[in-house]
Length: 222
Image (tube, rainbow, N blue to C red; front, side, top):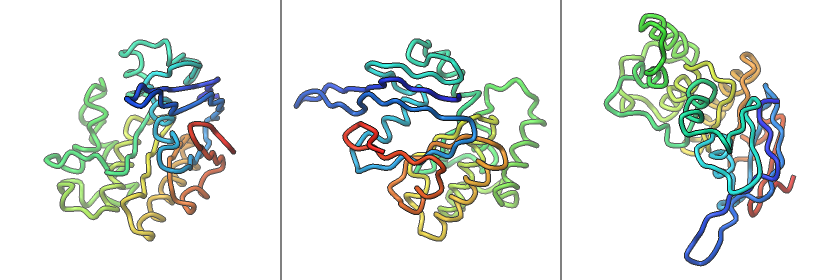
């Protein structure tokens, strides 16, 4: 079992009262799953993703990642789990504009003890995998939206994670580019046995999952 949640809840204090973003979610994710998480805006999809990453702490319930209890882990322990085991792909790409494509991919390895030569070779290999080896010295602004998202995928893979968390990774792309990115993610999932949990509004994107979760008002309804 890669991830397991039990009665997981996250509440926020708002001026109008308590917002129950996630309520009593029970979830089991196996290594190699491709999870798609759908639901209306404000339903709690992104909150669930942040909880799975240990970026926010639950109000109640439990969450474990490879038998590590995230709700009791220290901030340093959570950071260590993310740096070693989790990659992120976001809707807005989150690339650093003044760094080259190669250096953007290398960012998660900045605290890694491996040699610079090894890191560079592996990052270049990943850029070749996503079809961008010839653009590795370009800046993000010199790439198309689809190319920028492929750089973000290479960056998510560079620490050889068990899990990739993707928040609307095709939200800023046209339909053809969206399919291109989804096919890359599916290939990574199948060939590398990397678990992917993807939040999406797109029915097409949702169909790529072998496990489909729909959230409404903070609860899993199917």
